[in-house]
Image (cartoon, rainbow, N blue to C red; front, side, top):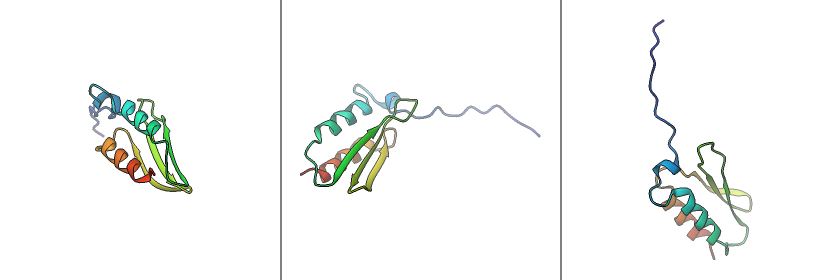
Length: 88
């Protein structure tokens, strides 16, 4: 059997892709500012990646409405849109 050493791409991290202000910091600010939510809505942010990425969930009465990782394309755009939808 032939085997080769293959270089794989490093896991994407929002802290690497960030820029002047990284994606995680912006997301934390936006979630903290979203204090007046519609009835039954919860927004949670979990840092479950060893690379510093976060996962945000928005639920209504326990039912998942939206969930995404900070390294996903358009994460901040989608987070802002979904937060606006669930605020009063």
